[in-house]
Image (cartoon, rainbow, N blue to C red; front, top):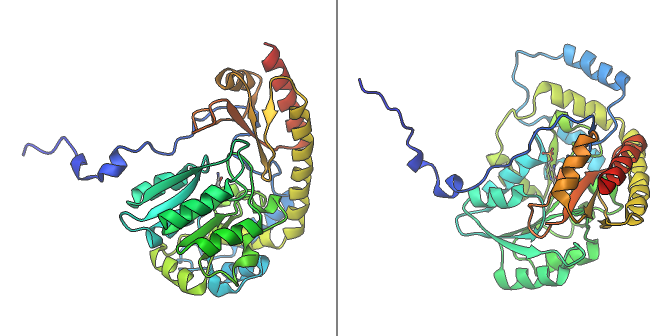
Length: 359
Ligand code: PMP
């Protein structure tokens, strides 16, 4: 038999073949400020309790298709009814589920630019058509243009990352209401960084059945390795997304860990406040540095302008500090992004940045 040496790649969707994948280069740096994670590890006694509890679970049995206890705990934390909430293994996955639910070939999706790169990618995979709306010249949401675009383009879906990654800008609920009013389609607010602000779109869910909110335990909760994200929507919408969701996507370990973590919401709040204070301190220092222009942020990150971002990025790595080089993103050709770390990490970043600028 001759066999088949070549896979039938022509059968793979054209839109996918021509698309670059999500890519993150690995660097070995002692100070890691490139993925907007929490710089604070979970306390050892909390980790021990999780491990002890996991020990008593049945590992050989399937978990519930939708973990009722975790859904209820998250719904209590968010202050919403459990019938509005879907949990999955990360909010990235929920973006995918949501797009598979609401995007048909040709559906227009409004996405601010620059924002989280995965949105545009998943729109393309689902056969939708992305309508980008640039941020304003200070990298804030251009609410007027968003409003006008929604009015004229009539998108099936608009997705706002608020606070935004990678710029840190936020949208207030008043402006959001204006967008919800003009939208005939869904408006999704990705609040991955929501714990670092004092507003949430959750407050609008009772009034706007076209609103969908995404949240995660990966950022302020310090649980990026646990892979827990959740979606809050009108119960009728949640019921449809549930059909798309893969059953058993929350493994036993993650379920138990998330349940324990939610018992410590006070600790998480306190840590989020510390990060906000550090953000203010870091912003002021960056603002006072020659050759650096930082942008105001409501997330645990700061975007800043520097004349030679590639060079500075590499010099920071040489000095043991990893930030995110976002200079290839649309409109960010002079920018780097730094996640807020512990005070010591932030000091080390500043020292490294100063000497990188002088080098
Ligand atoms: N949304 C945004 C805006 C993000 O920046 C990230 C992480 N970089 C995610 C979602 C991913 O969250 P999760 O870990 O819950 O998949």
